[in-house]
Each structure stands twice: as C-alpha cells, then as structure tokens.
Amino acid sequence: MTKRYWYVILAYIIMQYSVFLGAPLFYAILPVSGDEASIYWTVFSFILGLVIVLFLMKPDMQMRTERDASSAVMVITWSILGLFMAYFAQAFSVMLEIAIFGITPGSANTAQIMDISRAFPLFVIVPALIGPILEEIIFRKIIFGSFYKKMNFFFAALLSALIFGFIHQEPEHILIYASMGFVFAYLYVITKRIITPIIVHMAMNSLTIFAQYSLTPEQIQQQLDKLQLIIIGG
Image (cartoon, one colour):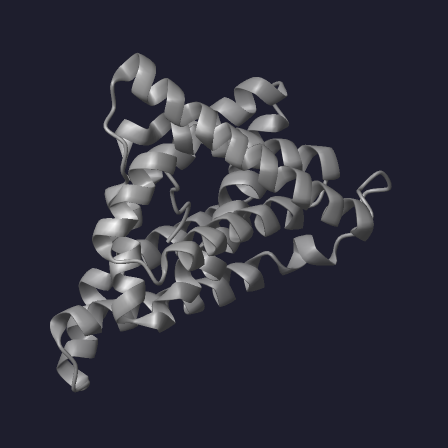
C-alpha cells in the first residue's frame, strides 16, 4: 500500500473522530445547541474529508483507464444489477441472522441517522452521498484492492468486508455489512471502476433514507423489523 493511501485512511479516521474537538469549537463560536454543533461539525468534517481524500486520490483519477474496464453503459447496467444483488444479499443475511443466530431485527445506527436527518435535513448528504464515496474509495479501492493484489478474490473480499462491517460499530449485524462488502467488491472487480460500487452504495442509502423520511420513528422501526433496511455509511 502506498504512503498516499495511508494518508487517505488517516484523513478518514481523523474525520470520524474530529467531532470530539470540532463540536465544542462550533458550540463556543456559534449560537447553536450542543447537539446542533455536533451535527454541523459532522457535515463540515465529512465535506472537508471528501475534499482531502479526492485531492490525495488525484493521481489515481489521472491514470489511464484499464483497457478492459467497463464502458459507461456497462457501468450503468452493472449499477442497476448491483442494486438488486445488494438488496438480495441483505435480505438473505437478515434471514440467516434471525433463523440461525436469533438476532433481533433493527439497526440502532440506521434509526439514529434517520432521527438526525429528520431534525437536520442537511445531514442527509452525509449517509446518502459523502459517506458512500469515502467508504468505497477506502474499503474497496484501497483496502480490498491492496488485499486483492496478494490473495484471491474470496479472501480479499472477506477481510475487507469484515473490516467494513466492524467499522460500522454494529457487530451483531456483521453478516449484513459483510455481505454488502462482498457485493461492492464484486462490482468493483467485474467493472474495474470504483464508480460502480459508489453508485450502488449511494442508491441503497438514498432509497432507504427517502423511503423512511416521512415515517414516524415507530413506523421506521416497524419497517426495519420487517426488511432490515440498513444505511451503509455515515
């Protein structure tokens, strides 16, 4: 892994935990409550993090596209197929969680994101747009890509998917997050374009958010209990 990639990962980690320093700063200089300061800082830090990551990844974006990389039409085609694949993988993982492990349906992370998005609509850009871009660059382009150079697809996808799952801090749903990681890694490999899993990741999160945006917290939980729609990112 190049030094530049380590800088990208470091920037992502700093962005994730900068709220502990940034939120008190916003609270001190802006006429907002503590919760509002945390949300505003989160949005600010994700935007800044995205700018920094894209700047660090600029050499990769300037590289010539691989000859066998998918065309724009194929990227769109695989993005549509990938969305169905991701939902199928998610549904299958939910059934396994319930039937084998007896895990109660529901995602605290998703419920929290929806609560925040209702109170602060601007926050939606984090899980719907910025989060998926950053996560696919880091977990698929960098982490999976580095593993894939040294081992076969299964083990590379497995390791990167497990890291992807644990980073979301819902170990009880590691199977769901890991299954998403496998799908996203496959889309990256089959098209040789990171934009494909980015599109699918953004589409999944956006559809989940907007499908529940008008629901009450109780209705959201009912939907989560039935479908286990999880927001991957943010």
